[in-house]
Image 1 (cartoon, rainbow, N blue to C red):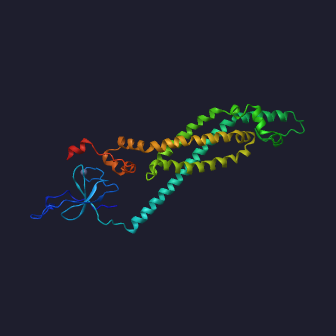
Image 2: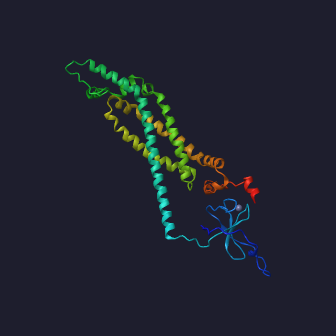
Image 3: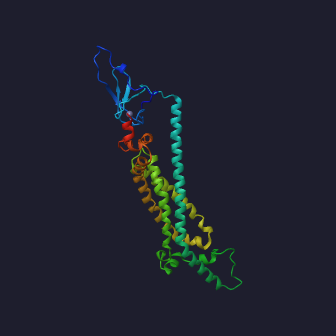
Length: 312
Ligand SMILES: [Zn+2]
């Protein structure tokens, strides 16, 4: 990577070869990588040829739009502090990425838990009625008084056969409240922006890899959080038992479904951000975002604004 010197004035007539000396063509040395904006017109010079100009033997890049010369440093001054800042930035990037996996997984698991809970609600109600009926048949001396609504009577529960209970109610698909799946709207609202964010945060990866990495990382974390939540349902009385019985079907469905909005975010995130940048930022400010184009082998947008062209 070449780094820049302080801006220099545009080529001066005195920089032409002295009298009698034949003009030599500029020697092409390499290609500019990284973002470097033309000081005059704001064009992003990334991808332009770095040439050794014939007079002073200095490395330069010429702006293809306005021919302004940008000077380059032959040996990059990368002191120990530049390296430290680079390492710090890389560490900050990694920490933010891991934090985003954690936050998105927590949000997803909350949405998934609420879907499982809502779906199991009618079953919980049904179980409670059966338990109440069973308690009403007991002699008054044996009838325990529950300390809260929906407290599980463990004697009654031990006498129940879960598959038989569900079969009596027509199976889990019959007793479940399918309107709980409206909660998938939350999964959409969480996973699509997350996919967009990650597709931009991992520009060095192809989108298939971004999807794989994020799906595995958030999938594993979300499963962990959901499973942890299931370990608490045993304290939730009758309703907790209902969630334990049919919640996993819905948790699994919601978890698998989450891959769809994540993929949408990852695959459409970069094109979407490019469209937004084009629409919202004037060409001069787009320069630093050129990596959104170059990372996918596209040409950054050329500042084609009439204002710039007529100004010269
Ligand atoms: Zn220019």
